[in-house]
Length: 242
Image 1 (cartoon, rainbow, N blue to C red):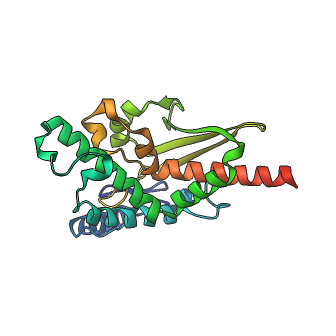
Image 2: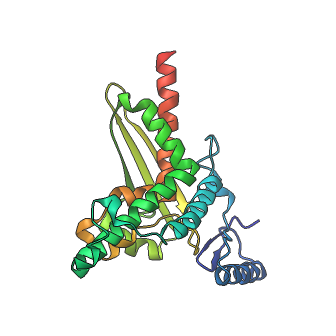
Image 3: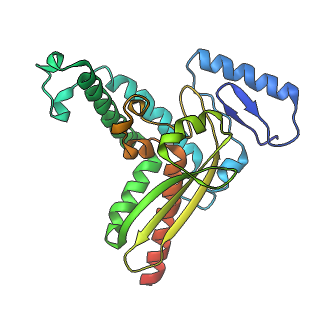
C-alpha cells in the first residue's frame, strides 16, 4: 500500500512510487470522472484524526456526495420567494440583483442539503445545540500546511487549486472553562463529486457578499475539525460534571 490519494484525476503516493499502480488508478479516475461516478482514493493517514471519533472521513465523503446529488434535484426548482423576493417580479430586477438572488438561493439550498444528508454536519449541530450554554463562540480557520500561517478566506480559492494538503483549526471559546482547539490536516481530495475544501460559487463573483458560514458548512476538512472539537468538548464537560 502506498497510502495515496487523488487530486482530480491525478494519483499521489506518499510512499515509494509504483508507476504501474499510478497508471491504473489514473485510468480509473478518468473513467469515473467521465461517467460522473464518485470514485475517491484516500490513504490510511486520512483516518488518523478521526480514529477515536464516532464518525470517520468516509462518513463525510459519502455525506457530501449524497448532499450534492440531492442538491442537483433541488436546483431545478428555483424559488426566490424563500429569500423574501417576489417570483412574480423577479425578471424586473437588474442583472446583478438577479445573479445575487440566485447565488443566495443556491447557498441556502446547499446548506439545507448538507444538513439533511451529511452525518458529520448533523453531529456537529447536535453537539453545538447540546452544549451551547457553555460556549461563548467558536471559529474555524484555515492554515497553510507548510508555514502553518492562517490563510484568509479571500486567498483560499487560489491556495486550494495547488495545495496537496488542506489544514483547518477549530477553536471553541468557553464561558467558564479552558478553550478547546483541534487541528485537522487532510489530503486535498478533489473530484467532480467531492472536495475536501469548497467555496460557495457566489464567492468567485461577489466577494463583498461572501458567506463564511456557507463556505465552512460545505467543507469536509472544517467539518471534521469542528466534529473533533465538539466531541472533545463533550468529554470535557462530562468529566467536569462527574
